[in-house]
Image 1 (tube, rainbow, N blue to C red):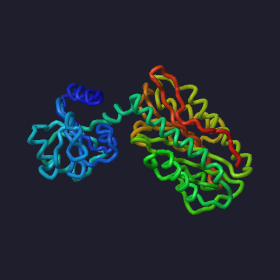
Image 2: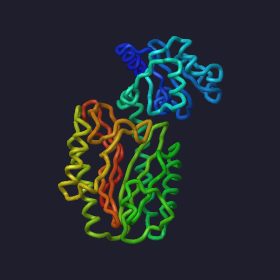
Image 3: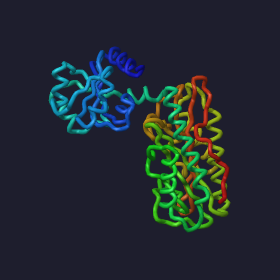
Image 4: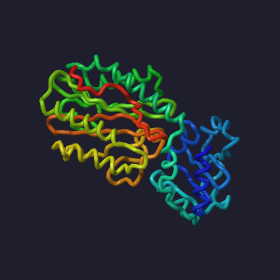
Length: 350
C-alpha cells in the first residue's frame, strides 16, 4: 500500500521508529474496514494490528501485510518496549489521557505526528473518489425524493427520518451525521438538529445531510422555501449561491485553502453580510464527513490533486432565517474542478 510506504519514508527521514495510529478513521483507512477498535503500529519495516478477539477473526485475511496482536496477552506499552520501539509518533488528538500516561511511564519518546496520516488521506485514489461520488449521488437522489414531502404541517423529524430511510434504500450503509432539518427562524442555526417543530408556510428550510457508501461519506446542504419568503431571505439565497460559484471558478492546484476562505468571506462581506457568515468555507470529505483539512483562514494547506472537499458558504439572520448551500467537489490531477453533488441549487419555492 502506497500510504504505508509514505509513512515509512517519513519515519526514516525524521529518525522515528514507529507511528502509533489511534484515530479510528485512520485505522479503518488502512484496514478498509468500517468497524475497528484498537491501534495500528507501523515501523520502518513492519505493520501491526493491536486489537482484541472481537476483531482478530475478521482481520485474519490481512495477515499477509499485517501482524495481528491480541491485546489481552500484553499491554501496549510493554509490547512496544519489548520490540525496542521507543521513539514513536502519536496522534495526540485521538489518544486517551490514560493511554498517554501509560506510554510515558515506560519512558517512551513520544512525538506529535502532526496529522501525518490525514495528510496522506487528503489525496484520494480513484477507488476512493468513486466511493465519495456514489455517496454524493445518493445524497442528490434523496434531495430530489424529499422535495414533495416538504409542506406546511410536516415535522422536521419526519423529514429527517424519511431522508435517512430513503438513503439506505438507495444503498447507503448509514448517515454521515444525524440529518439536519432546520426551518423558519431555526434555519439561522448553522447546525440546527431536527426537532418536532412543524414546517410552516413562508419559511426557509435548511437540509444538511450526508450518506456513507462503502466507508466513504458525502455532505450536502440545500435550502428551499415553503411558499413565498421575505425579499431579504430571497436576496441572501442568491448571495450565497453566487459566492459558492465564484469561489469554485477560482480554484486551482497549489492554491492556499486560506485564500479560498478569505475570498468567500470577502464576497459575502461585500454584499453586506460579512458578520452573518461565521464559519469556515469547507472541509475535506472522505473516510470522515468532516476530515482534514478545514478550509478556513488559519489553515496552511494547499489545494492538492485528488482532493475531495466541500464548499459551504452561508448567511444566518437571527429571528429571520438562514441559507447555506454545500456541495462536494473533487480536484483532479489536471486541476479540473468536478462537482460530485449535482442536485439543483435553483431557489426552489415549494
